[in-house]
Structure formats: structure tokens, C-alpha cells
Image 1: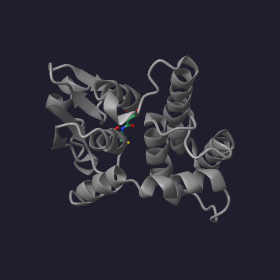
Image 2: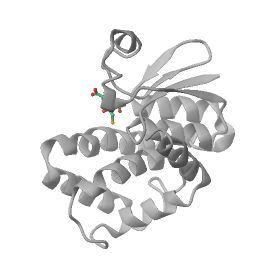
Image 3: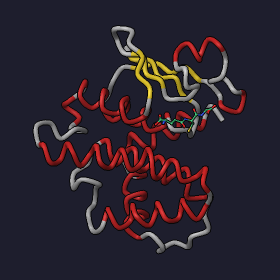
Image 4: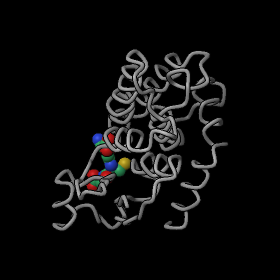
Length: 189
Ligand SMILES: N[C@@H](CCC(=O)N[C@@H](CS)C(=O)NCC(=O)O)C(=O)O
């Protein structure tokens, strides 16, 4: 069984969604950020960076960073089709999107709302008229959704400012795995 160290509504939500999408057996270990529970010596031994997610695999290996956990889950449970196995261009596209989300998008919040707005503008352009980030549903969509979902209340942008991104967000919210992960995490506060 996989074990996910998480804090509700944080970066680890993406990993949580992927686990549910894949029907993976998993257990949760909550580390509330509000209680600085990722900064204890015990947790720093798990992830020296003091961040969630951390995913413990069946053989006891610890994976950190959202992108790596998503990749592991997608490859470990290929039937869910979250990784475009063997299609080189598509595989590179997923990595491109996840690098963009983890660096430009996620990093934008610390730099201020105008940087978030700019990252959203770029994401909106990159999506264009595609339903999903690489054209078909993949872990890139999960990663993109989580950051957009969390950061959008922080900027004042009327609906319609980022139409492709907003449509992607709504599409993601209809997915049972997304609904379930949000519901489970809400119970933790
Ligand atoms: N680069 C990391 C970022 C993860 C991250 O920033 N996690 C935040 C929550 S969204 C965290 O655990 N912060 C706790 C802290 O900094 O004390 C990733 O992609 O996993």
C-alpha cells in the first residue's frame, strides 16, 4: 500500500487525486501546515525540504515533489492511462507542462498577484482550444488543476479572463476522483 503525507488543499492534493484516479490502495498521513507539522524532526527525516507531498512506495522508498509522485503513480498503474506511455512527443509535453506548473505557476505566488496573473495568462495560452493539457487527459492536468484551483482566489480576475483555464478547471471538477479527493480533504479542515 502507498502512503501519502499530505496537508488538506495543499500541493499534495494533486498526488491524492492521482491515487484515486488510479484506484491505488493508499493510506493518508496528515501533516497540517497550519500546525507546522512538516517542520518536525520526524517529518524532516522523511522530506528534508519540509514539504508535502511525500509518497512512500510499497518498497519503502520515499518520493517527494508533486511531479515525481504523479509520474510514479501514473506508471505504477498504467491502466488508468494517466501517462502517454511510448509516445515520445506526448511524454515530453507532460514533462514540459509539469515543469511549467511546478516552477512558473507554483513559484508565482511568492512573487505577487501580478506574477500569478501572468502565469495564468501563459497557461491559458498554452491550453488554447485543447480540452486537456496535452490533448488527452494526463497527470499534467491534475498538476495544473491543483495550482490553478488554489491560486485563483488570490487574484482579482473576473470570469472570462482565462477562458481555456477556467473551462479546464470546470472539466476537472466534474471528475469523480477530483470530487472525492476534495471531499476527503475537506473533512480534515
Ligand atoms: N516543489 C514542491 C512544492 C511543495 C510545496 O510547496 N508544498 C507546500 C504546500 S503547497 C508545503 O508543504 N509547505 C510547507 C512548508 O513550507 O512548511 C513540490 O512540487 O512538491
